[in-house]
Length: 333
Image 1 (cartoon, rainbow, N blue to C red):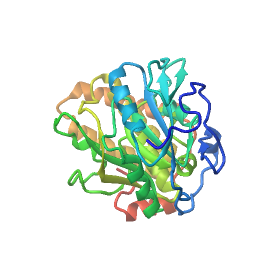
Image 2: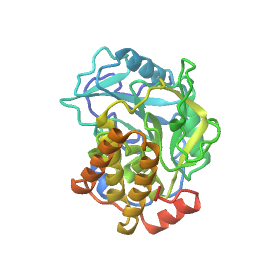
Image 3: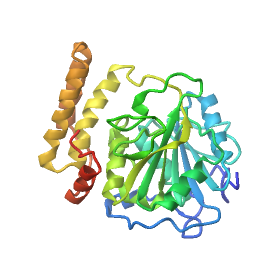
Image 4: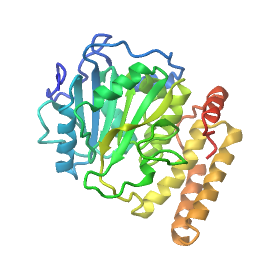
C-alpha cells in the first residue's frame, strides 16, 4: 500500500480532505443535479487517491477483516477507507480504516451512500464485507482502464469463489453470459465490488436509497450510461466472494419484484414502464411456473411496487436509451 491518506485511522467519521489536490467526498446533495459528465479521464496522478467504502452489519467479522486487509495491501494508490456499520458500531478494525456507525440498518444502498459521504478520492470503490480483492494491483489496474478509456464510468470485476466452488452465472451481468473472463459493456452490475470515478458517482446520484436491497446495481449502471459513460465488466480483474444463493427467503422475492417496478418508475419514460415490467413478469412466470407460492410472493411485491412511494423520478433521456439500444440492451428487459 502506498498510503492510507492523511486521516485514515482517525476514527472521526469525517472526510479526509477536499479540493483537487486530494479528491472530494461525495455530496448527497449533488444527486439533485443530474447531467452528462464530460468524457475526459480523471487527471492523472503519480499516486491516485481511492475512497473505499466497506459496508457491514457485523455478522461476518472474519470475512470483513480479510476484505479490508486486501484493500490495505493495494499498491500504487493512496487510500481513504471507511467501514460503515449498518446498525452496528464497527470494532477491531485494521489500522488505516475508520469506522462510521449507523444507529440502525438503513439498507444496503443508503449505507453505501453514507460511507461515500465521509471519504474522498479521485475514485470510489465499494466492497462488500464478504468480498476481497486478491491482487495487490487490483485498484491500480482498474484505474489504468479508466485512464486508457475515458468513456468508462464504472467497472465491475469478474467474481470468483476462492474455494473453487462453481461460480454462479448471475455474477456475469449479461443476458448472453459468454465466458467469465470476457470483458465488455454492461447494463447492470454485481454490487459487491465496483469502482467509479468520483465525479461519475456524484453525477449518477449515488446508490438508490429507497431500494434497501436488490436492483440498486441496475439503476446505478443505467445512470452511469445516463451520465454519458459506459458501465464495464472487466474479465481480467478478479474479486473473491463465496458462491451463496441470495434467494433464501420470501423477503428476497418480494423486494426483487417491488424494486423491479420501482426501477421502471424511477428511471424510465412512462411509455416504457409497462413494457419493462411486463417483460419481467413474463420471465419470472416462465422461470417459476413450478413454484406457485414463490410466484405469489413475487406478484405481491409487484403490486407493492406500483402502489408505494419509490422516491424521486429521474428519467433516462431518449438519447441515453438510444445509446443503450445501439450497444445491445434497450432498457425494456
